[in-house]
Length: 524
Image 1 (cartoon, rainbow, N blue to C red):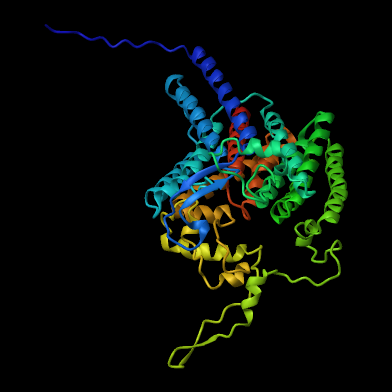
Image 2: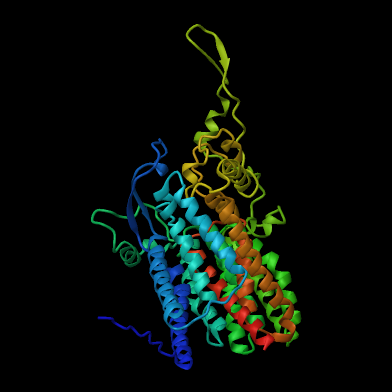
């Protein structure tokens, strides 16, 4: 008996698919905005039982319980948010007749992803490369999430005011961190209050508690990240004040920029301040190209004038505020007493051994010379130049596929004799490269690095095109471009973490989507 099968093709209703895609995009937008707003705020004590790949006398690299406050819950939320937006995107792609646009930047997405995967597969310590250090959570999984969030964000349609929604979503991040920073700065750290301590330690296992003297500097890992991230916030909100047409919102954005600047100063770290200084010429040029030059320029001037008393007040309390900001350009600090202070302060135990002889004698009284120890000093950039040099040296040994992301402390020459001259002390454990570009080259090798640099250059190219057209278009997306460029600049001095990379890679994806959409509209 012969059976006959008929292939039935159900015609698709393009209008219905379009409406469905818009609904999916609306949900993706909500999740992305929530991710931008929530991830940098999440904190909570967590303990991980870590199995080290090394046996060493350095406690920071050994097997044992590892506790941290800042990155674990950010990482968990990042995984959940990425899974959700990718699922929604795949539904749109596979079932709603969405056509993926062909863009050259997608090749760099692919190359970077391949570099991350290969570096993890061939990493000497694969589990470490996959998850990253237990107190940082910045391994391959995190980077894949950053990349996927940027990719999905780039292929989503947004409401007209999405740029302003992004700015509004980060208000809580700025004001909560300002509160925590000023409390710590004035000596009233939030963790000295029992309510805050109980909230942060709520999920710790029984018997675990915070180490004595723990401080809550903010919702990010440490001052370098606080400085860099709020340098980005400062220029982003100042650009928002330039682009905005509503006077009240312009005033609010300027206030938020000043609050962010105060956090940069309280961070006692130069990276964020230097980022602001480098981008000020772009902001002035942006103001000159705006429709209302006088108002735009007046808000920049108000910001600069108001920054002076903020700097004075904070530097009066702590002279290091001047040293880590204006002091980068002007060495004389008017807030310090006229007492000579050494350029590199070495703790007493490390000063005491400077008088030891370099001669020792064996039983037969035959003398031989020990290596001459270098004088304790700090290399340029608070020791960064030394770290960069040594990291690049070991990177050359695995240039193709790298060592795996966030694995540096287990491959860095921690017993290098030159560490004394580069970091001031021999016992410091180098756990990160303090530079995203070097970190990615070290972690993913040349394959991933080319993909990453390609993404950077393509995004900057699109931003440059939009920047030059701003006088005619007045497109608000330029605000996101300024924030992304600030992030790339401060990345010269800092590494990534889920709390900093997640919102800004997502923001970059939104920026690309709006710029491509604007370009398409111009072509008709």
